Length: 323
Image (cartoon, rainbow, N blue to C red; front, side, top):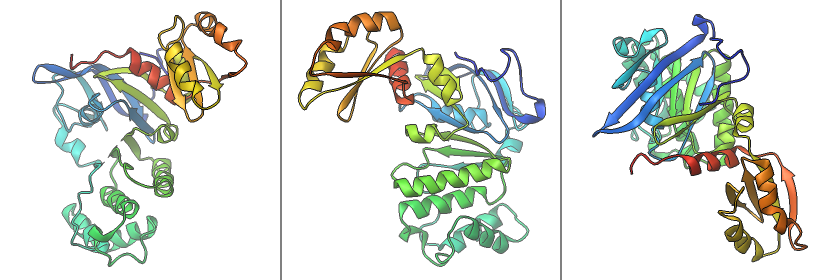
């Protein structure tokens, strides 16, 4: 597992700055380890992104980190509370936004928020709802039924509901699935504003552009935390050398098949009208692609590996825990 290089190897943040600090978490279902020996820290005000394939253990990890699911092995704290013995205290300070819209479809925007305010025992639910509506740009839609909102507006309403009681930790489980790019950008602008005020955010996502908006990311595959740190660190830690090769129509597919499995070539992936060709051993990669670089119909350019290149490479090396 890679370590963030922004601090000395054994350095740990100040206790007051650490929201989550867990060691060696393992969780099994039906005898199969969904998460294995996971250790990590998350600092206050951090937007921490979890990436990985479906079934990789992202959601299980997030639920263990904040006391919503008890690990079979391992220890740790969340918001200063023990994740095994003080889960009730953790839950009162956590906002959880699921992928599926879970508010009342037949209540209006205002009614949903006021109801949530009363559930959490807020002193003035109506005032809290008005403030949330203004903050999230829902003004003018107060009386609209939640079930009649578009995906982007539902997303805003759900975010308003889970942040209404002012939680210290916000969990977002693939929150922008099926939402248009403009609404996604506005959503992330709001998340960064909340983090700037000290809210810590854990978010699972499949979108590379969203991963790049996180302060730190972690890639989980088949229950194992393979790498974590800033985006820049994760890319550098991959030690990938990448070439982008362009060609005319019909050429790239045959080239992809030829290059796949060649010594030194660890990843070949199509990107529009080009291929990304990467390897972890720069010398071996150069030798493997040398015959193809002499072809006049191919245009080769060396490039920095993208985050997606890194994740495709990590995925190709991960061992499926269903087997």
